[in-house]
Image 1 (tube, rainbow, N blue to C red):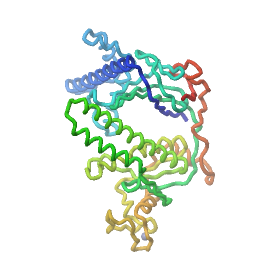
Image 2: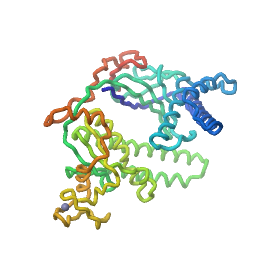
Image 3: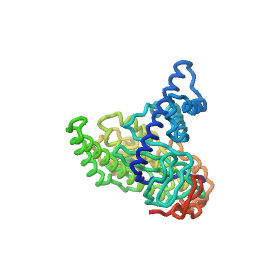
Length: 411
Ligand SMILES: [Zn+2]
């Protein structure tokens, strides 16, 4: 099975390189907005969608146009990659109901993607038009690098996210199944009875963020102090987001190792975000991210993530006798089933109902079909994440061209 995994490293560009990156970011943003406007105008004029390849050709032609010759300062492939991003944004809108592509502003997160011609040497990454940029390779990169995305955060930090491809054995995970109830009180409650609380350090970091935001709002617009406060807020935001991502990575790692089948509710997250009372808690807990992480990690490990409809009354149903308790309110943390007399912990019961509920179908159908071919009773995980194609040629040990396999231990 061919998988892709991204490795993210901090960059330390010089001031000259930062300037060069700013040029790339700016030109790429301009191209994206130009292409988006072009597509919209074409649609308004003809009622037809401008085909992707026609748009790509127009962008190439744009550089020859004297009014746009400055675009030559940017790497051509980076510009083309952004046109592809626009295509993906449209696809997302039409096929998955994500938001309509919007024009990008300078204050948004800045990013460019190099599909080719990047290289690694020692603790540096070579980026066309920018040069050899210092990078902190704090962890091993495994597989064949396919592309590099350079981003600048609102706090002014630079990162390289390197997407690597590698072949892994198609594993089959015959671990037990688990139902998971995600909530605002606990991050997750498992059908095994275990409750995973929200990490405390995140709460502390969030409190600090609120305080910094309040301080920012008191600063005079356009003042130096306001800019300083803005950076503090942006940095704290990042700190909170990193902490949350770390928590979700650890939890999804554990769940996909321990359990072959993970069942969760298909929460209507977008709908919940619209509800202001719920929005903050929902956004903070990162349920959507947890599902995404669990999905791809389960696929690597041969497991499945199954989702049940969000209108399924998981909380109100008794997992023992299926009695539906309509009298249950949000305040009831514990309840006794009037039919069979079982005393339920609200969330654990919900997780157990989810475990036994009819699914909307497996989210990872490939792994699901593979599961049936394995004799029952064989337990647990085959070794996973083994870099089978990665020959030991570390960036530290010399030149690595884009597209060649690397396995590096850098620090
Ligand atoms: Zn009951």
